[in-house]
Amino acid sequence: MTTASEIAAYLDALLEISSVPDYPGAVNGLQLANKGEIRKIAASVDFSTRSISRAVDEKANLLIVHHGMFWGGARPITGSAYARLRMLLDNDIAIYASHLPLDRHAVFGNNVLLSHQLGLVPSGEFARYKGTAVGVMGETSMRTADIVDKAGQFARHHGGNVNATPFAEGRETGRWAICTGAGASNETLQEATEAGVDTLIVGEGPHWTAVEAEELGLVIIYAGHYATETLGVAALAEHVAGKYGLEWTMIHAPTGL
Image (cartoon, rainbow, N blue to C red; front, side, top):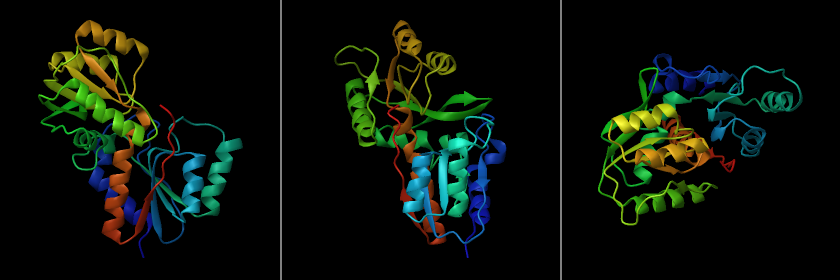
């Protein structure tokens, strides 16, 4: 019999969650236990009513998510929060969450898997958070327009779209960096500039980052927060299901961002 605690212990070690710093609301690891044997695993980017409902429909009783139950901070368990918890308890569904530990993982991480999707080969680390690199970077001679096209195909496949800051026709990318999710920030733009990166690929970022990028001679490709973080949870669920001989499914719930 495979339990949620057994799977969680394996994932905690695999993802090194005890040594990876993260935001307070991440609460990486097993966030909600259940009382029975794990029958089927579901994966979803976000903990939400949509993802839980689909897990119930799929008869999955372990849900692996990137943004977990406490992402929005402490709040009263009333209204929709109560309804979600009630649904989980009624259907004996456990929740496992991994944020930055999953983003940075060398095999199952969102950043390295997105680089593969775009035909890019990582050769270095990028996007440090409290001293720990979350993203990846590398070199290429690919046309920037081709990277944008690949990112667009990927984003649309996951219910999103792609936007890029202006660049000249025929421009080639020399050094690129990836930080999925909300990857465009003052810190990542500064780090990209210092590392000689000319093309930064992220999920999303504030409007001002697009303005600043043009001033810095940097192209930013915004491929969608949701889309760029679908890869890790899917790869992790598939891996765990294979290890324990379980079924698994990916639950898609695009946010439009």
